[in-house]
Image (tube, rainbow, N blue to C red; front, side, top):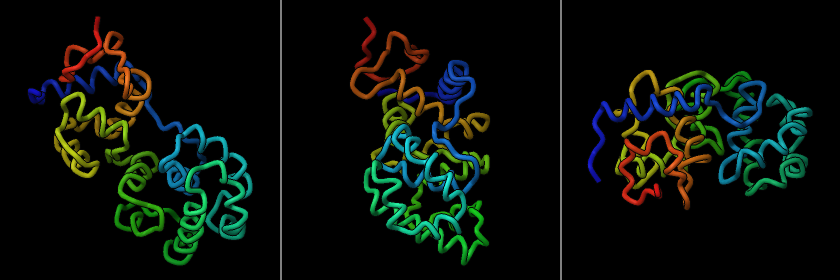
Length: 214
């Protein structure tokens, strides 16, 4: 697969930005704490499934103190529709304890402190920093990993390597929105099994050898 030039990379993100002028997360939240909890819950789960349980949860527990008061067992009942809900409930309760004890109940705005919280890995921290604090992070989920390799932006085998490479090649102006653009394009156009290449704004730039254009 031929490499994309820096001009092509810039053109890809300009085309995506024009087709998706206001990209944003689908998760629903009203503060940094709710965002963190929602992202923890979204691991190996869809945003749709998370949004079904978080309104009721956040009505009764919108802060670390109230979540801790709710307790692990009641939290499990609130989120039992979500995959791995027992592990996630345990991590959220432990995270609330640390937020209260070490961070004055505030969500850290740096990667090191975020990744020290139970249930918070590289991708989760990146989403919180990007969405919550407006930092130009490029968190890599399955859509971003798949599209980055399919389009020819990168040639990588892990999310970590993909993120490192994207941070080097994505133009500065697109870094804050890059992961949203790739996620939305992956969900609605460049689908995993049957990409809609004929409807894709990137069909002339994409390096995917198995395009479905008739």
